[in-house]
Length: 245
Image: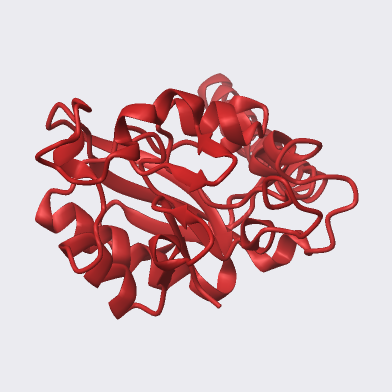
């Protein structure tokens, strides 16, 4: 009888333990669900669209929005954040290393831009760096001086009151130091004077072989995907600038 009594007690204890464990798991699950439901908006990553490995675009995440607010995305910006896309792009730098860069463009040209830079990557056209202009305080001169390839920046065209197509994320500046903006008033960035001479045999710039010229591979690739080139402008020459309009 004693053995039977002890056996029943063990069974009751085991059953009780199972119930307690099940309840704990249920409470933990509910708690976990509650945390998910109460998570701050934007914590979950936006859906990432892949064109090729290393070439993706997505809506702006909260983290990216925080980086650009008050910098490239001004308080008076009349373009909705939902119209912009964040891109990750593989490129080859001047030392032959493969790097992953970032860029913000209009959603209208997100996939098109990836196609352009995928082709540039395929032919091995080198790019020195590709970071958001916000890493330079959205200062266009500073970004250009660093030879930074970028796109979106809500700003006016230098020396005018007219908004640049960069303000809509429809323009891209590529290797701006070696492909400067030249007008009758001067050259930008200021440290690009050696590249004012566009003839390779006469240019004294270290990276003269990477200057963009009408009819070269870079020009043809951008043109194929619907971009026009600032190097074709009549009253100014913006060799770094490609825009989609």
